[in-house]
Image (cartoon, rainbow, N blue to C red; front, side, top):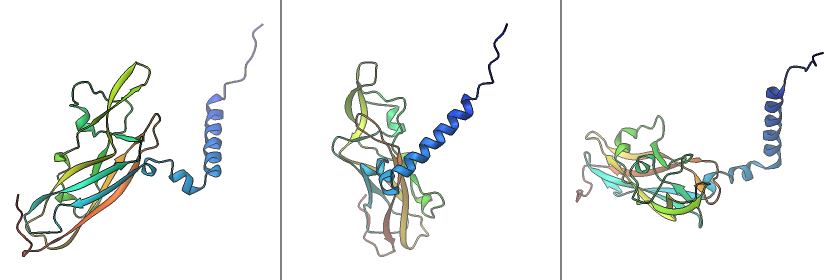
Amino acid sequence: MKSHRPPSSTGPLRMALAAALAWLVGAAFPTEARAQMGSDSKVSVKAVPARAAARPGDRFPVAVGLESAPEWHVWTSASQAKALPAGMVTFDSAIYTEIAAKEGSASAGMLALDAIQWPAPHGVEFDVGDGPQNFAVYEGKAIAYVPVSVPADAAGAVTLELEVTVQACTDTCLAPSTIPVTASFEVRADAPESVT
Protein backbone atom coordinates (compact mmCIF):
# COMPACT_ATOMS: atom_id res chain seq x y z
CA MET A 1 0.00 0.00 0.00
CA LYS A 2 1.37 3.40 -1.01
CA SER A 3 1.42 6.19 1.46
CA HIS A 4 -0.16 9.40 0.28
CA ARG A 5 1.63 12.67 1.01
CA PRO A 6 0.00 16.00 0.47
CA PRO A 7 1.65 18.20 -2.16
CA SER A 8 4.62 20.13 -0.85
CA SER A 9 3.92 23.70 0.13
CA THR A 10 7.43 24.65 1.21
CA GLY A 11 7.78 27.25 -1.55
CA PRO A 12 4.85 29.43 -0.45
CA LEU A 13 5.64 28.73 3.20
CA ARG A 14 9.23 29.90 2.77
CA MET A 15 8.04 33.03 0.99
CA ALA A 16 5.57 33.78 3.80
CA LEU A 17 8.28 33.24 6.43
CA ALA A 18 10.70 35.50 4.55
CA ALA A 19 8.06 38.23 4.29
CA ALA A 20 7.25 37.91 7.99
CA LEU A 21 10.93 38.08 8.90
CA ALA A 22 11.41 41.19 6.75
CA TRP A 23 8.39 42.80 8.44
CA LEU A 24 9.73 41.91 11.90
CA VAL A 25 13.17 43.34 11.12
CA GLY A 26 11.53 46.49 9.79
CA ALA A 27 9.34 46.81 12.88
CA ALA A 28 12.17 46.04 15.29
CA PHE A 29 14.50 48.70 13.94
CA PRO A 30 13.37 52.30 13.49
CA THR A 31 14.05 53.92 10.11
CA GLU A 32 17.16 55.67 11.48
CA ALA A 33 18.66 52.38 12.69
CA ARG A 34 17.94 50.60 9.39
CA ALA A 35 19.66 53.44 7.52
CA GLN A 36 22.77 52.96 9.67
CA MET A 37 23.06 49.40 8.39
CA GLY A 38 23.96 50.66 4.91
CA SER A 39 27.47 51.38 3.71
CA ASP A 40 26.81 55.13 3.93
CA SER A 41 27.01 54.72 7.72
CA LYS A 42 30.74 53.87 7.36
CA VAL A 43 31.76 55.83 4.25
CA SER A 44 31.48 59.55 3.54
CA VAL A 45 31.86 61.08 0.08
CA LYS A 46 32.53 64.63 -1.10
CA ALA A 47 33.28 66.19 -4.48
CA VAL A 48 35.50 69.24 -5.01
CA PRO A 49 36.14 70.81 -8.43
CA ALA A 50 39.74 71.84 -9.20
CA ARG A 51 38.41 75.24 -10.29
CA ALA A 52 35.83 77.51 -8.66
CA ALA A 53 35.53 79.43 -11.94
CA ALA A 54 36.21 78.11 -15.43
CA ARG A 55 36.09 79.43 -18.99
CA PRO A 56 33.98 77.87 -21.73
CA GLY A 57 36.02 75.03 -23.26
CA ASP A 58 38.16 74.44 -20.13
CA ARG A 59 39.06 70.97 -18.88
CA PHE A 60 39.81 70.14 -15.27
CA PRO A 61 39.19 67.34 -12.73
CA VAL A 62 36.70 67.01 -9.92
CA ALA A 63 38.18 65.22 -6.91
CA VAL A 64 35.77 62.67 -5.45
CA GLY A 65 36.95 61.85 -1.94
CA LEU A 66 35.97 58.62 -0.21
CA GLU A 67 36.60 58.33 3.52
CA SER A 68 36.03 54.98 5.22
CA ALA A 69 35.64 54.65 8.98
CA PRO A 70 38.60 53.07 10.83
CA GLU A 71 38.87 49.31 10.17
CA TRP A 72 36.46 49.56 7.22
CA HIS A 73 37.20 49.51 3.48
CA VAL A 74 35.37 49.64 0.13
CA TRP A 75 36.07 47.57 -2.97
CA THR A 76 38.03 49.02 -5.90
CA SER A 77 36.37 50.09 -9.14
CA ALA A 78 35.35 47.36 -11.61
CA SER A 79 37.77 48.70 -14.24
CA GLN A 80 40.65 48.69 -11.77
CA ALA A 81 39.79 45.15 -10.61
CA LYS A 82 40.62 43.94 -14.13
CA ALA A 83 44.30 44.95 -13.84
CA LEU A 84 45.42 44.66 -10.22
CA PRO A 85 49.00 44.80 -8.99
CA ALA A 86 50.71 41.43 -8.61
CA GLY A 87 49.67 39.60 -5.46
CA MET A 88 46.22 41.21 -5.19
CA VAL A 89 42.94 39.49 -5.97
CA THR A 90 39.28 40.46 -6.26
CA PHE A 91 36.38 39.11 -4.26
CA ASP A 92 33.85 37.36 -6.53
CA SER A 93 30.85 38.89 -4.74
CA ALA A 94 32.27 42.41 -4.46
CA ILE A 95 30.05 45.40 -5.16
CA TYR A 96 32.65 47.59 -6.84
CA THR A 97 32.96 51.31 -6.21
CA GLU A 98 31.30 53.26 -8.99
CA ILE A 99 30.97 56.96 -9.84
CA ALA A 100 28.08 57.84 -12.14
CA ALA A 101 26.21 60.94 -13.24
CA LYS A 102 22.82 61.34 -11.64
CA GLU A 103 20.23 60.13 -14.13
CA GLY A 104 18.70 63.06 -15.97
CA SER A 105 21.36 65.50 -14.78
CA ALA A 106 21.82 68.43 -17.16
CA SER A 107 25.59 68.41 -16.57
CA ALA A 108 26.12 64.68 -17.23
CA GLY A 109 27.62 65.34 -20.67
CA MET A 110 30.50 67.29 -19.09
CA LEU A 111 31.79 64.23 -17.21
CA ALA A 112 34.28 61.78 -18.75
CA LEU A 113 33.24 58.83 -16.55
CA ASP A 114 35.16 56.33 -18.68
CA ALA A 115 38.42 58.18 -17.94
CA ILE A 116 38.30 58.36 -14.12
CA GLN A 117 41.70 58.23 -12.45
CA TRP A 118 41.15 55.82 -9.55
CA PRO A 119 43.34 55.77 -6.42
CA ALA A 120 45.93 53.04 -5.93
CA PRO A 121 44.39 49.99 -4.25
CA HIS A 122 45.47 48.76 -0.85
CA GLY A 123 45.67 45.07 0.04
CA VAL A 124 43.65 43.57 2.90
CA GLU A 125 44.43 39.99 3.89
CA PHE A 126 41.41 37.83 4.60
CA ASP A 127 40.44 34.16 4.40
CA VAL A 128 37.08 33.47 2.76
CA GLY A 129 37.64 29.72 2.80
CA ASP A 130 40.46 29.33 0.27
CA GLY A 131 43.28 30.36 2.58
CA PRO A 132 44.49 33.91 3.21
CA GLN A 133 44.37 36.16 0.16
CA ASN A 134 45.28 39.79 -0.42
CA PHE A 135 42.08 41.56 -1.57
CA ALA A 136 42.27 44.91 -3.40
CA VAL A 137 40.38 47.70 -1.60
CA TYR A 138 40.36 51.42 -0.82
CA GLU A 139 40.90 52.22 2.87
CA GLY A 140 40.93 55.41 4.92
CA LYS A 141 40.95 58.41 2.59
CA ALA A 142 41.01 57.75 -1.16
CA ILE A 143 40.52 60.21 -4.02
CA ALA A 144 39.31 59.52 -7.55
CA TYR A 145 39.61 62.22 -10.23
CA VAL A 146 36.76 62.67 -12.69
CA PRO A 147 37.63 64.67 -15.84
CA VAL A 148 35.28 67.55 -16.68
CA SER A 149 35.00 69.28 -20.08
CA VAL A 150 33.14 72.58 -20.07
CA PRO A 151 31.14 73.08 -23.31
CA ALA A 152 32.11 76.07 -25.45
CA ASP A 153 28.61 77.53 -25.10
CA ALA A 154 28.36 77.10 -21.30
CA ALA A 155 27.82 80.10 -19.03
CA GLY A 156 26.80 80.73 -15.42
CA ALA A 157 26.57 78.44 -12.43
CA VAL A 158 27.06 74.71 -13.02
CA THR A 159 26.31 71.95 -10.53
CA LEU A 160 27.65 68.50 -11.34
CA GLU A 161 25.41 65.81 -9.83
CA LEU A 162 27.18 62.53 -9.09
CA GLU A 163 26.17 59.26 -7.48
CA VAL A 164 28.86 57.17 -5.79
CA THR A 165 28.09 53.51 -5.08
CA VAL A 166 30.16 51.81 -2.38
CA GLN A 167 30.05 48.67 -0.25
CA ALA A 168 31.72 48.98 3.15
CA CYS A 169 33.29 45.87 4.67
CA THR A 170 35.40 44.67 7.59
CA ASP A 171 35.09 40.96 8.38
CA THR A 172 31.52 41.33 7.09
CA CYS A 173 29.97 43.58 4.47
CA LEU A 174 27.14 46.07 4.81
CA ALA A 175 24.46 46.64 2.20
CA PRO A 176 25.79 48.80 -0.65
CA SER A 177 24.80 52.47 -0.70
CA THR A 178 24.52 54.97 -3.53
CA ILE A 179 25.53 58.34 -2.11
CA PRO A 180 24.55 61.53 -3.97
CA VAL A 181 27.17 64.29 -4.09
CA THR A 182 27.47 67.57 -5.98
CA ALA A 183 30.31 69.84 -7.14
CA SER A 184 29.63 73.42 -8.25
CA PHE A 185 31.60 75.98 -10.23
CA GLU A 186 30.98 79.13 -12.27
CA VAL A 187 31.53 79.37 -16.04
CA ARG A 188 32.48 82.83 -17.25
CA ALA A 189 34.66 84.28 -20.01
CA ASP A 190 36.78 86.31 -17.57
CA ALA A 191 37.70 83.34 -15.35
CA PRO A 192 41.46 82.86 -14.78
CA GLU A 193 43.12 80.84 -17.51
CA SER A 194 43.65 77.17 -16.89
CA VAL A 195 47.31 76.23 -16.31
CA THR A 196 46.91 72.75 -17.77
